[in-house]
Amino acid sequence: MQTLKNKNIVITGASSGIGEKIAHNVAELGARPILLARSADKLEQICTDINQKFNGDSIYFQLDVSDPAEIKAVFKKIYEEAGFIDILLNNAGFGVFDYLNEANYEDIEKMFQVNVLGLMVCTKEVLPSMLEQNSGHIINIASIAGKLATAKSSGYSATKHAVLGFTNSLRMELAKTNISVTAVNPGPIATNFFTIADKSGDYVKNIKKHMLSSDDVAQKVTNLMIKPKRELNVPNWMNWGNKLYHLFPKTAEKVMSKMFDKK
Ligand code: 8X3
Image (cartoon, rainbow, N blue to C red; front, side, top):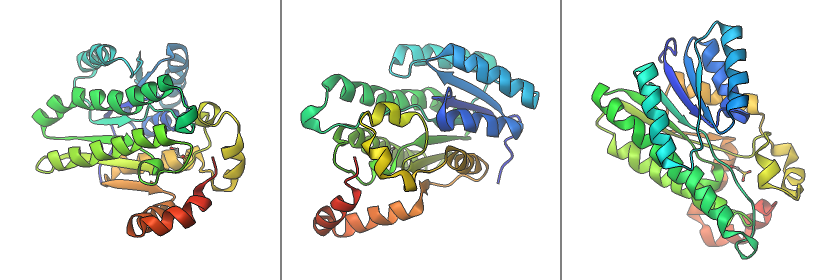
């Protein structure tokens, strides 16, 4: 167990969804959220709100995580301003649900730039300092789609499988250090993610009763910062589906793909 008091916590994708909620949670616990996202206007508003509510010293920087040069420049500024990053929450990410046959290459490329490469570059930016101090925590928001692929999300699932592969390898690379590495694999969360991901609205309609609340997931991720774990799967039953799939892939693809074919 560790306190978040005075911890510098960098959050990518902090302008909405669980990123924004986690920023509020950690500020309430005395941490200093450092907010990153493309929209400076939204970040400024969130920052002002957090600082007023919790008498905090939260700061923000505009960042498009699909641009590696911009990532480097922003992290340089963060280190100049904050000195040390205690926790990096790689939360920025988006999906476009399409059958490969109908998908735009540009959407797939952008998903890889943001969900995978951007996340890797941000991580690479914090590692030297974390290694030097021999402390820190890197949390990557992956997805249940990184474990259990479903139809109509070949591009998105591929990015999330990549995030999980990267996260698991990094954890092993850092096993002899005090740096924790966590993967978070949520199922569908009620946020504006689906405005882009599910343009037809069919998926949201089909899985309404399984939709997770963003407050709930944000709270679980906040708890992880206090007590690091290697992996968080929400809801856990979806991870059981994943386990069954890997034990009996052939049967599972026949039986379960019907169950999970909701997009
Ligand atoms: C999104 C998860 O279940 O909506 O990361 O495809 S799901």
